[in-house]
Length: 175
View 1 (cartoon, rainbow, N blue to C red):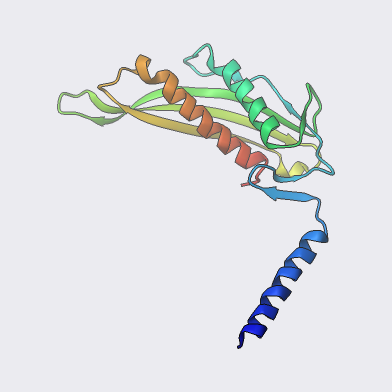
View 2: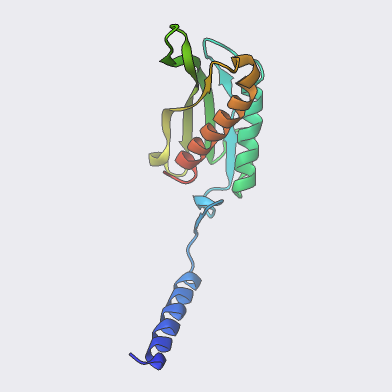
């Protein structure tokens, strides 16, 4: 194949791609827009995070509530409304646990896993088949040389980021 035929093939491919993109599609597939049909979905309601874990860290629920709202507002074109949004998200913290991962010769944990579990009820009023009620979990581990009270806030930030991405991917990205 000579260079003219190669150039012709490339141009035809490029023009075909452009034509397909101009054909229009109301669903947005992008890293920050998710797979939302903005012609049908305009609003989202995000309830206050409730903490029902046996151990309650006082700032976790309000901090996570604001973090969720900010995340969805900055990554979608949905308007945040106080009630009856096209999408609704309600989160409940159900677990805040420390679990020994490995035990040393002295019978003390060498590493400990810090796990936060969250129950999420997601309602899509436009497409009920996408609604769900399921649990999400994230953890980080730390060595015994670091007392939990010293690493708790940093680990919690990482865990919240992980949980937030899981929830966002399950709701907006449909993963």
